Length: 196
Image (cartoon, rainbow, N blue to C red; front, side, top):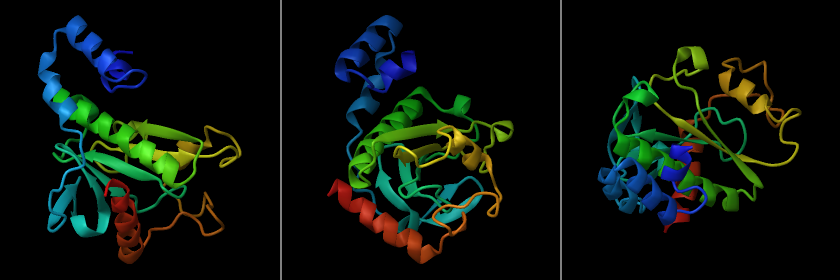
């Protein structure tokens, strides 16, 4: 419940003031004002767990402490990830400022994606640790645009996130396959325009 208030769901600044006054954690305030889209250079590389990836190919959103990146194996169009810039395996290892930035970035990205993909809802999900289905040892929030009937059972989305089998799940009759670098770069370029 505190996290819900902290990330601004259901009231924004009012809830943040409540959170800060109740918990006496005013040190979070700087991350609240740093949530504008950053103009950080998209040249160079970044780490997603053990993988070294090109910013120009995968990053579409940059905040003070987080990246929004396109997904190698999306389960629906617009399924993206939000990651802390610092490589951190588990959610509990994030600093309070990183938690705030990560969730506010996810919320900000979700609003834009819901409009862009003409979705009617969003799923936000963290698989925190291998036993929870986390396949890359770097905290990441799945941000997934949703529509009625996009899965036979609504909670099937979570089973798909855990599945590493390309043949087990079929999306758009193609199967859940790794996308090419070109496909990912094209999507990242399109999504970047949402913040211009």
